[in-house]
Image (cartoon, rainbow, N blue to C red; front, side):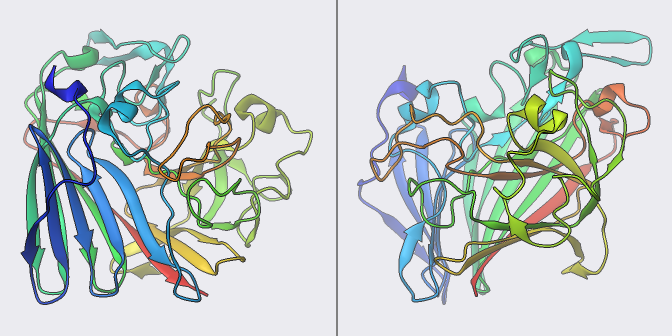
Length: 370
């Protein structure tokens, strides 16, 4: 099968140039690697397999470049990865968990693929992270990008409706990566797309992320049961290990005797975003600062929630691009989203998409130093 052939990252490049930002394309059968580069040298690599961000190369405060996104050198490593950790992928149709893999629309109950104990996770057995997307490079004034599209057919992984999905990555000369999501359907269905890059601002493979300082624009989170399914409660973070309203090291409270931390094996929870003053129309979701390098990641989003996951299930079995194993808590994810299990929680923001309507959402990742 063609998808199982190695994708090498040293193929000849075809450059498409604008005044500053540019796109380079590496082609191997129907799997391609696209390199987006802006005028400052910030580089984002994306493959159309799984719409995966394979690499993000950014400077530290001294101008030293490092790849801050966990990932692999070859496409078959994404296909065959232990425990399928979704490194860098777009996940869908539904990012996060749906209890028992079931939801009801009208009078019809749909049974989805079950791939996480008794529950449905990240779109099922063959989700959007495991398919080849159509891809089109884009270039404009001071930016370059990649538009990826995929048709999820009626019944795929148990979901109703033919769902047309477009995800557009845009890298700007202001060191911002914008992710725009668009979807339409011909039957009522649930949609909750997200981007699942694991970050380590020291550089991928350079130890754990427990000393990164995290701020979350969230005064509440959604506690979970033992299966990591939200209970329906919106719980205040104040006075708990989940309070990141002011910057603190990720590892400061992770060892506390707290039932929610025990259920998640650490942080693996949805935070309810508080909104507030927007940047480019998008409220702040999170800011992460790594004191050793001075690297900063700032996230804004139109979504109501963000899943903070700190790599609890990484255990050293995966080896990344630098040839080093990804240790326990060797990366963190900040997955902007609607809440987990929303189809079965009437008090959560709805994820139901109707025919004739559009699913539209945007998240930005801004890279800087301090």
